[in-house]
Each structure stands twice: as C-alpha cells, then as structure tokens.
Amino acid sequence: MSQRLTIIDFVEKYTRQYASHTFLREKVDGVWEETSFERTRQEAYRLGAGLLSLGIEKGDKVALLSEGRNLWVIGELGILYSGAVNVPLSIKLEESNDLLFRIRHSDARFVMTSKNQLPKIRKVLPDAPQVEKVIVFDKVDDLGEKEIWIGDVFAAGDALLDVDYAAFEARFKSVGPDDYANISYTSGTTADPKGILLTHRNYTANVEQAHSSIEFGEDEVMLIILPLDHCFAHVAGFYFMMSCGASIATVPAGKSPMEALRNIPTAIKEVRPHVMLSVPALSKNFKKGIESAIKKKSPFIQKLYAFAVRNAIAYNKEIWNKGGLLNCWRKPLMLLFDKLIFSGVRESAFGGRLRFFVGGGALLDIDLQRYYYAIGVPIYQGYGLSEATPIICANSSERYVMGSSGRIVRPMDCKICDSDGREVPDGERGEIVIRGENVMAGYWKNPKSTEETIVDGWLHTGDMGYIWPKDRNILYVVGRFKSLLISEDGEKYSPELIEESYVESSPYIDGAVLHNSQNPYTILLMVPNKENLKSWLKETHPELKPFSEEGKVKMLEKLQSEVNMFKKGGIHYGMFPERWLPAAVCVLPEPFTEQNHMVNSTMKVVRGKVEKAYEDRMAYAYTPDGKNIVNAMNLSSI
Image 1 (cartoon, rainbow, N blue to C red):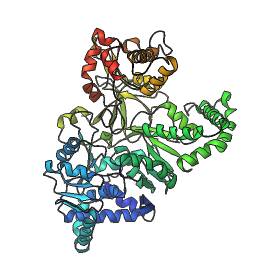
Image 2: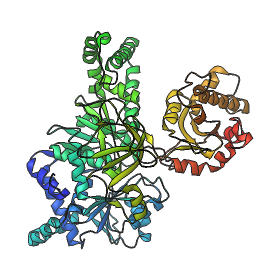
Image 3: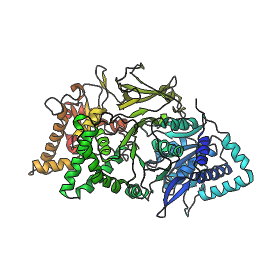
Image 4: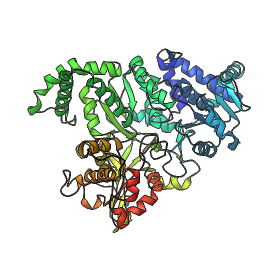
C-alpha cells in the first residue's frame, strides 16, 4: 500500500524535487511571469503563516472566490498549510442566495476573493455574520471594515515566520491524511447544493491513480481554461501537473466573462501549451474558429481540407481498430495532408505545440473526437465526478478507445449495478459504482445523503455506463442512471441518447429534454433554433413572414417533422424503441443557460430545474390540445 500522503506532504515532496522548474505562469500587465516550484512553496508558507497570525485555527473554513490565477493556487496552499479547509466557490455564481448559502452552510470564517468578485461578497456579507475577514487579492482604495489586502497578510506571515517558525511548522505537520482539505459544492442540481467533503488523502490518492492512465512530460505546459474551483481543473490541472514537474498557465480574467473568453485565443498563441483542459462547449468553439478560418481560404484549399479530414477519419475509425488492409492507401495521404494542412492549423489555432486536450465535464460527441484526432490534436475523453475527487477514468495516447470514457484508474474498484444493486455482466448497462481512496468522506452536514450515496464503502455515482467486454479496464459512460423515463407500467429507460440524437441530427433543435414520470406518454421539452427556422421559412415559404401566425404554424410543423425522423417512416426509424419517443412537444421560449440555471457550470442540463420551470407547459402537453404541436403555448414560443 502506498504512503498516505497529505497535500502538504505532496507539495513538500514535489516543490523540492522540481525546485528550480517553473510551476505557475500568469500574465501581469501584458507580460507572462513565471513562478518556480520553490517560490510557490515559499509563498504558501508566507500566506499560511499570515492566516495563523490572523487567528485561523486548525479545521476552520476559508471560502475562496476568484478567477483562475496564481493567487488562487497559492491561496489554497496557504489555507491548507494553516491547517484550515478551503471552500472553493464558482465565479459563475451570480445569484446572491447561491453564494450566501455556500458561505453560511460551510461555516466559513474567512473569505479570499479577487477585486472582480469582491462586490458579490460585499452584497452577501451583512447576512453572513460568521465571516470575520475578507482577504482581497488586489489593491482597492475603499477596503471595508472586515477587509484586508493580501499583501498585508503576507507581511504578517513574514513576521510570524521570523519570530516563531516552529509554531507554523507544528501547525502544518499536525495535518493528517484524513483531515478535510476541501468542501466542494455541487453545481446545484437540487434546491440546496451539497458540500462534498474531500480529504487530503482523497486528493493525493486520485493524483496517484491518474498516473496509471495518463502522463505528462517534465516542463510541459498546461493551459487551464476552466475555473480552478472546477474539480476537474483543480486535480487534473493543478495537483497532477505538480506531480509531473510540469507547469500550469491560466487565462487572464479580464473585467468581464466576455473579456475572459476573448482572452483565450491570445493566451493559447502566447503560452503555446502542450496540453489543455477542455469541456465539450469549448471544444466546439475551437472547431468553429478553425472552420471559420478555413472558409476564408481559396475554394481549392477548402476542398482539400475537407477531403483531408474525411480521409483521416476513415483511416482512424475508433483508433483501437484503425487502419486495415482496405484503408492502407490512406496513410501516406494522411502524412502528406498533415504536413501541408494540419500542421498549419495546429500552429495558427493552438500555437504549434499542443499534443492533446483532456476532455471532461460532460459526454463528448464522438464526431468531435474524430475531428480533433484527424487534425492531430486528439481530445482524450475522461470521466469523473467531484465525489470521486474527481478522476475515475481517462483515455490517453497509450490506450485510446474512441467513444469510451477511457481506462479506469488504478488502484480503484469499479462495477456496474442494476437498480437493485446487483452487479451486471460486462457490456450490460447499469449504474457506475466505485470504491477507492479517492471516494469522498461524505456530504457536509448531510448524513442522509451520505448514507444514500456511499454504501459499504462503494460510491454510487448516479451515472449509467458499462464495462467494455473487449477490455475490462475500459468504461463507457452513456448518461444518467437516475434521470430515467418511467412509463405507466413502471418500465424505465435512459433518455440521454435520444436527447443527444435530436440535437445532433437537426439544425432546428438546440436543446432537448425528455420527460415521462409514469405518464401515458413521453413528452419532449425542446429549445428551437429560431434563426435556422426563419431561414428555412424564407427559403421554402417566401410569401410568409416569420412573425405571422401562418409562418409560426409552418415552423412548428417543421419541428414536428424533425421529431418524426426517429418514428416509423422517418430516416432514423429503429434507432430507439418507439414507446419512448415523444408523443407531444413543448417548444420552449429560451435556451438552456447558466443565467437561467438550466445548465450547471459543466454545461450539463439541470433536468429538475428545466422541469420545474416549465411545469405548466408539461401539464398542458398531457391534454388533447397540448398534444398537438400547433398550440397556443408553442405558438407564443416560436
């Protein structure tokens, strides 16, 4: 059994092993600055000692709300060295109640925050009297009564280290592997988000497990685009890269979320990363950017590019089965096109050094995986969840099974169970259940949910998947186990594949959620692509205006025809059991966004909130009038 390291043991080990190497990269006043492993540890000492001087006790909670930057990393390390527990908060929390709940529920004594996020903290502070100090990362002219600039905390730490280093050392050496390191809150798929208790050993164990599946080279650079509070970025980025002797760079935040998005392409070109962390939404945006650039080239280049992509996809197949006698002629063409076309694409879009993405957060479209592998920067899909700290499996260059979620990390046990908790044979779908040192300690102040989620040491993920019969180390994740359609007779069916197929197959459907909770039939909650519908109407019925009732009727009928593609007579008939296809459609007035809380921070649709928001439309869909797509509610949405 490996040594049960704390995060502090881990940091001490690797910051000394790679002392002179660069660990952190950050753009300050237009210039990229580098911070060594050694300096990172020294800064953590200074901040940890500063927190001690402010009165932090072992086990106290410190909330951290900031964009990804060096001080986020040093902030967490300082908290841990002081013996306290970090409560990382998402910068995407816009509602005061969401933020207030987490700060109060976690019992946070202190809050660390950036200047950009400070107004949010100030807004909720009157309702969080247990917060004693707000440590601000940036200088501001109007510090409030409880607020202190982090520079002053560092100075206090320096003073303590000078006179009583022994007290600081005693504190950080008192931290054990089973002490809490984080309370990481869920994205809020329920009314009250749950605080996931992650121990020091949860983190170090998951890093050790991750090394069984994927590796990085010493001094390679990872650009972390995701917020650092995101569990995937936190572990797969921050701690994993530290253990490799590699470095991490963060995208400059800017003054607004839109400015941060605009900073991503520039950061990629300047950092020239070897690897990036990605979620499907980001990967799609990168692909759109590449294709937009290609469209500006000559028609000949456009056709050559399209042929090159098709040729590579045909050769690669699902990677594990690529090539073959009938496709051998494609390989020399791939090498030629890579030199003539794709090397230029990689240079202009990703800086020229990018070896691969690591994808997580949600299921990644296999066509997107095929595309990126074709152009020479594969996206290695992985899978995990915060309760598992989070990595459960990942693809890599050593073992890539496209379409799967990758090789299960070891040492960790994984099994697939039916709804009664019985293990099912390989290849059969069921709930993914895992056991290992990466499994959370439980939910903060929520023993009931803890008992329901961890049973005899096994974490029930709530996700559906199966073990690949060809290789028991490979896991396929196919959707949510608990988000099931339930018919009147009690039969269950997972809706995700049908929902994804509607969106992928139709340019007129941007979002889809199926619902059946022991009802007479299934209904579809649909987000239409209104612009594409208007274009279709203009081409096919130029005499009709899109805002006229006649125009709206035609567009609704078009949506119905798209839904019918999977029914008898449709081009996709037979893909799914007829009984689970929708008999009624609710056309929704707005898309699923983080702003309306219909998707969470990893861009997964929050099914419960969608259904809650459209209860009236769903009820109407179970009436004779509502069953017809051309109805008053749908006409008002189109």
